[in-house]
Length: 195
Image (cartoon, rainbow, N blue to C red; front, side):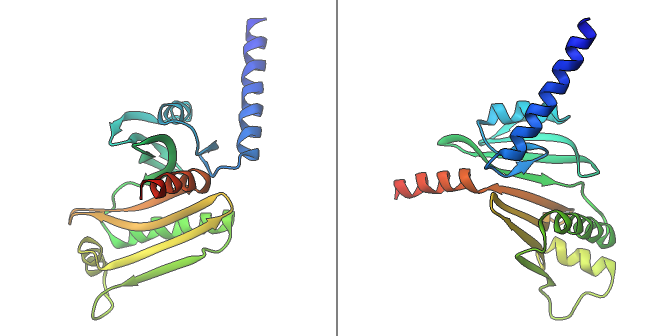
């Protein structure tokens, strides 16, 4: 009897949370609307299998699997003055070669295009006198900030930005950032009030 009750409860919870995410006016990340306080959002991400590593300057740092990639780092951001989640950034695992780094970028870009349509803005180039020819020179360009690879997907609920980034000269990775329109507008409005 208890087993049937708990099974029914889990099914009901799944249906309700699915319905909430589909009818939400907020951008969705991992099935959860980008809204609420930092603690509320972190709790929801823990239920999705993420591990909370801690908070730093209004950003919760989590670790977990995302879009078929293992060991991603996820930053859930708020504005310090207002505890309202408005941005989520996924940092995919570091890559040592251009072929694997660009492979991640193009794989994610294809999946995003299938889901959201063609990007509204794309820039994919190297800022150098001549186009890098081999894998090593392309990675050198990434590490020294001479690689501009990004795609922006605009939706009614916010923007999604995919890019290739680096941290110093040793760490190169793909970043996928979600910006909720409603909460970003609230934060901008509050910032304008300060001016």
